[in-house]
Length: 160
Length: 160
Length: 160
Image (cartoon, rainbow over all chains, first blue to last red; front, side, top):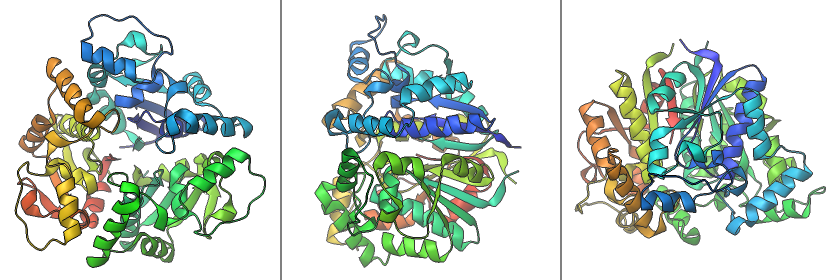
């Protein structure tokens, strides 16, 4: 039996535009009283990284390299199209500001105020070489089985 | 309670191959009598642009630039892989023609004949700097809440 | 009426990371006793190609060219981000090995042992110039209507 008030979003992509779309939908659903879960996996985890460098132990050389090359947090994400070495995202943010559209940082803060459940995929963290210390607070660390259990009760499940 | 005959597709991507996949599924479902809704957002809106230049007012310089750089309509879309500066899409169209597969233009026309509901995301239009005058006729202009209300009643919801 | 134990995954992407995500979820669901269907379309078909060259007849010149340029099987897939001409996938595989995470080849073998239904989209095969001889055994060759019929009974449907 699915519950129409339950919704889940997989954030696989770390592209600014896709992460924006995910948070706009998640916040929209939560504002209407829905029970919303977001599952961050692979590049999507980059949207949840702390902006500062975090000292970590136990990473292999390759994992360190991956972590160093990937964007740290919402302000560093690229566009999936027309990125132009970072000019595209800057221009898009400037239009969003002119038009009073919430930034990704504000959308993430709103998601947390609205108590959207934010799950980080531990297997992806392992593959990408990211540790919990490098991610923002308030996340649950889970495997794919937890996501699947949430999704099968929901009326809307998207892979973004 | 979900309705098995209701289906929704978010067209976020503006890649020719992904937009093709969306319209093939949407038309297939409509042909079987389903109630189908497509929600066009971000780059997906480019599939609905008129091919000709449209004079607009009230756009900022950045919005004008975005609008000028993005493809105008289905014949201008790129492939997500093997685009090769436009050679890939031309080759794919030529194979589709040889094999009697409907073009994207024909699929869009069929979608409209089958009365598939086509929704354009107004927030994305704002971000991308696209106005209703630049898009084809017969669209509904809505926010994310309208999409979410449609999706929660549907048995199939895909983000493409 | 949807069946919570039924799940479908469209594998449209041929990127190593996205195909990995699809098989991890599909195998996870099957391990919990779910009835799982995967529908391979467009670039996703490349994950099912045999690694060796297969002699085919009836292909146009363009179809031959497409087939020659696309990756043959799971070991040849690219990353959607940080591919760096094949260095990225090699590094990711090396981390996965260190951490005892299953390779894509192992995940595909497990999917078959778990009797996950694997459907190949015949229209995409036509567009991409791929024949059944070039794909691994044990697939069903179907059109989009078959996918839609499976999906509308399922509690989870993702487009990857």
